[in-house]
Amino acid sequence: MGKCMITNNIRRLRFERDEMTQQQLADKVGVSRQAILSIEKGNYSPSLELAFRIAQVFGVTLEEVFTYEGEPD
Amino acid sequence: MTYQETKNYVSLFSSILIFGAYCLYLFQKYNEEILDSTATLSFWGGSILILILVSIVANIVITIVFIIIYRITTNEEEPAFADELDKLIELKAIKISHYVFLLGFLLAMSSLAMDMPLSVTFILLIFSGFLAQLGNIVTQLYHYRKGV
Image 1 (spheres, rainbow over the protein chains, first blue to last red):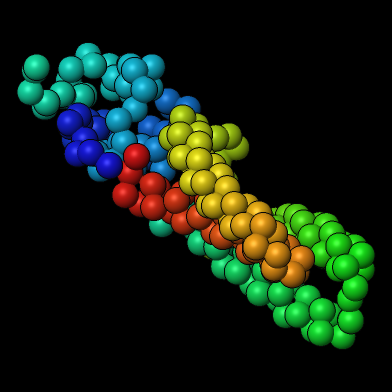
Image 2: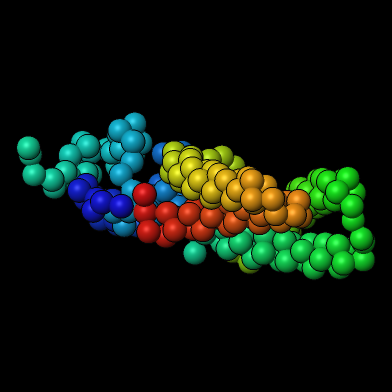
């Protein structure tokens, strides 16, 4: 299993939205709490569609939620 | 611990319990019966069918009991659907369990090729089915805990 090159600010964004719980975010984007937990910990890179849905819930752009940290070829 | 992890731990425990109990029963039954080659085939054929039936019924009962206990203890409802992470992990787990069963199947066929008793072939098949199931559950647990 390779190191995840995508970091995210979901924890901070949840905190800034009145400490939204993982379950609340999961319900809004239509996945389980396990998926949100794994994404937050950097254990899972979500699909593009799910990434957009998460950004949409927070009302920010995709880049404000996820950052790619890999080196360009 | 999330619902998925807890469910996998329960599945792991129940699979070992059901298979262990069934093996004990089968071992006693096998020792009681003196089998010729035709009777061996029908004995093992029946045993595998009963094992499949017992496993399905026991798993349904255990899952229902688990859902009730989980809801009471955590006040959380079980997810009503499998999301993209669940599906990805399930695919990886199925792949591992297929490899394990294939290996067991090859060993079983090797035992036939080497003129070993028929019982050895069936024991290898039953055990490879069990190990494939364990492989499936352990793979799911690993990915839920460590990521994909």
